Length: 251
Image (cartoon, rainbow, N blue to C red; front, side, top):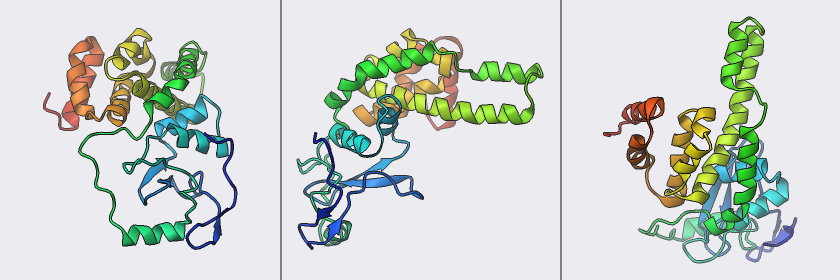
């Protein structure tokens, strides 16, 4: 991993100068991170769990965040790494290459877009973050509802609190997804159970873990939850089965 990105690059094909794209434009939700050799690219969404984790847990932003994302990605199917400088090729030339060449056929063997060995380097920090949130005094949804029902806050304050809580917990759930990717399918759910994540976030955290495992291991969310539902007693197991029925699962 290099310490910095070149701010202005001369395209090796057309010799025009360009700046690497390291984050979405203001009105966009994602940007393309190209292979350094071919025209394949990966979409990096602002809500991508790994991106959110690197921002939330490691405090990275801008160039540092882009470099971390680049380092944590698996190599392209052609064998070369993805790079924010796109292999010193500008967007205009890349568009021409995409139009003139055939995309590499997807491999029949599943490959995670993320380099799990690199992500494991952040496991300790991620765990510290999650434990810190579990022990924090941040207001929960239950506490917010109780305040409203007891007349301690008005409707406007309640709605503002709901919005703030949803945004905060969405970031935390993204971190849990990345944690699940690192732990893998044999450990992730049991770790969630051990650390009472369902008690804090509700059953949706199990769905989020399954989504993280789909990214890292390639197994569908429904298959993962179908195998997991019987492991949870009471409301958690019931809610999982209701969720699967709603989205067409035959479990």
